[in-house]
Length: 159
Image (cartoon, rainbow, N blue to C red; front, top):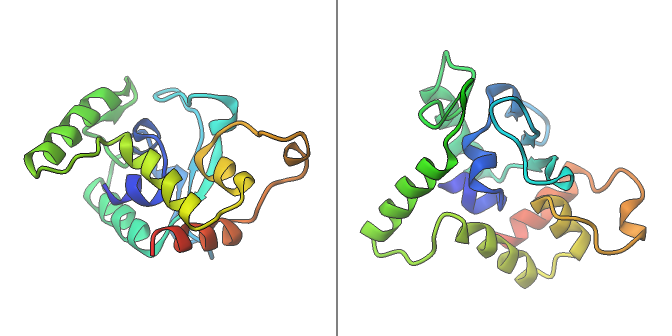
């Protein structure tokens, strides 16, 4: 749940993570959202590196420990046969409803957009974090923002 809430990633991007997509020992820990045989990504812009806030890192480390010995971080929902993001969505949405929490799992992605807006994050930061297409021609040039810069904006958003 915290990975969804504090990365703004799509549910399929999170439940489809492979262990090799997780860089918890990096100087700025991050997940690499990339297409692979068991889970595609929505668009070409969706491939990206998303830094982890301290809570997201803690959640990922726990998930990695629980899935030790498996290639996938969430083997209940992803295997070599594919990613069952709809199953994960149904499970999470039922859990949210049982606790009378209004947003859906996908609503957390929209919530992160609102948090980034409230933190006055520049549009190109938002686009890079959430894997959206570039709005302006000039934002298409260069390598994009560093993980440190992206983490600074995520941290401002989730205070």
